[in-house]
Amino acid sequence: MKYLKIGLVTLIALFQWSLFGQTTDAMSAKTIDYSYLTEVGTIDFSGYTIDDYSKAFDHALQMKTDSLNAANVMKGNVVMSMLAKQVNAEIVNHNLDSNARQTKDLLIKFRAQHYYVYLPEVSMIIKFFGYVCMGEYSHIYNVVTTNSKILPIVIFGVVLLCMVILHLFGKIKWKYKKLTNHLILVVFFIFVVLTIAFKLTCGCNVDEYSFYGIAIN
Amino acid sequence: MKSFLVIALSCLVFLVLFFSIGNETLRLEKNERLKTFNAISASDNDFELYEFGHKHLNSKNVKIKFLVGDAYTKFVDLQKSKDILLVTSASFTSAFFSDGTPIGLCAYEGQFLNKMPNQTMDGLVVINSEGLMTTQDIIDLDFTSKKCDLLMTSNHAHQHLNPRENALDSYVFYNKVETDKLSVFQTQLVYSHLKKDDENFKNILVGADGKERRFLVVASKNGELKNLIIGTKAKDYMLKAAKDVLTHLRAKNYDVNFILNLDTGSKNILHVNNGQHLENLNQNPSTKLARIERASSLIVFYTDK
Image 1: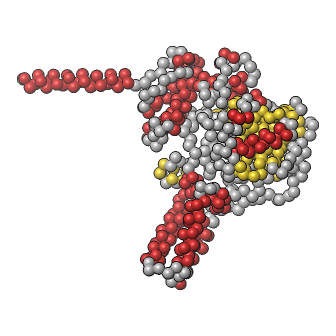
Image 2: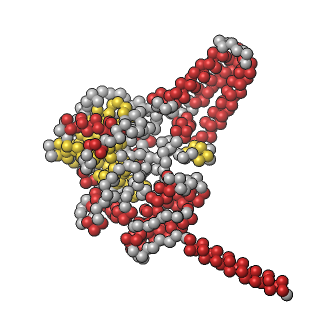
Image 3: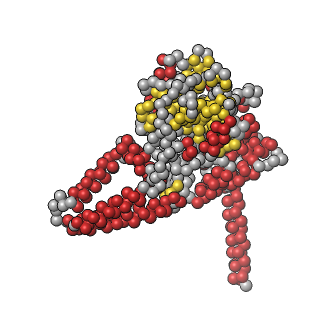
């Protein structure tokens, strides 16, 4: 009986604790005061998490589409503009991870409302493989021969290629000849296979910010 | 060793052939000498300049249109009913190998394609298709907006709004664009008469110097409004090229109000009416993306037929 009482008390305590936890969560959720237009124009977003932004977006969208109340539509639009700008700034400042699932979901919701939040410049890697995919070799040549940052890498590549050719023609005498031949053959084989695989599949696997599912931004 | 060489060389030949997949042959137009540009004057050693006044050949009104979102189809439709004087690539998009998303605010005749202002580009262009672009059609986003209660009265109220910096302004601006069916794009405002020259060109060597440059200029000459498309023949930094253009135009007695940067990247397009037909002036681009059929956005100067 004594144990039953102790168990009951413990259960009640646990229940109250769980309620307390819920209250704390509800208290921590950020809310935007929509009472006055001047208020929604000056929202303090400090301490907002991705969840808070997502909830604020849903609320703003609800207000924005309230066809019965013009003031709500206006307030919803204003808040959505502010949220878009704020979320963009949070991502740019690395306070939010642009590759996290929740962030991606929020960006998709923004895009559905024509807010293209966070459009970083397409990376050089994506551009390179994109042009290779499209067979734009003369354009790649133009870029690499005029870009002062890429040119040293290209020169290094050309020198390496020349050395390989000299080696193949037996102009370079050294003791690792056999091993180097094998290495060149293996590298060349891998290169050919990867190139064929890439050209056959690149069309739907390279886009602005991802390369075969790997996020690059 | 010989067999190894043969294998390597045959693989190389195979690769070259394989790489050529996807290389569509560019359909180039007949390379004719340029005829006179009629109302559009042109040419200098350093710049290519196309000037538009209110009237073309002293009769028809010159109008300007911004096309985006399946720009080529819209261009073909426009071409059926209008005489095209010049068409060039306009604003920037996020993707280079597909249609992509317009960077910064962008709308076509009241329909927004992107409501998210770019935080670094300071020029906002509003086009109403009724005539040339005036100074009121360009918003310098580096300037703060005026108070909202002043906005509703003026016909050109949008010039006092700053949708990049102020959320209330953005609401008023978006409503105006949608109601009046305006077209909008955002780009770099490389010269604004609202700022001093030092402010305009303080970081003159910023960015890359690997592109030729093209600008849209709103100016006046002898009191008459002019819109100009002016391109540099040499590759240069954007702001340095803009400064050279400003100096050049001032020497020719233009009173320059705004200079806006246009896209000359992989989708670098410029077709000009040579008096007989619309001629492609970028006939040998290094990429097939630079074809009008693949354009992301276009600015078109035209008259009614």
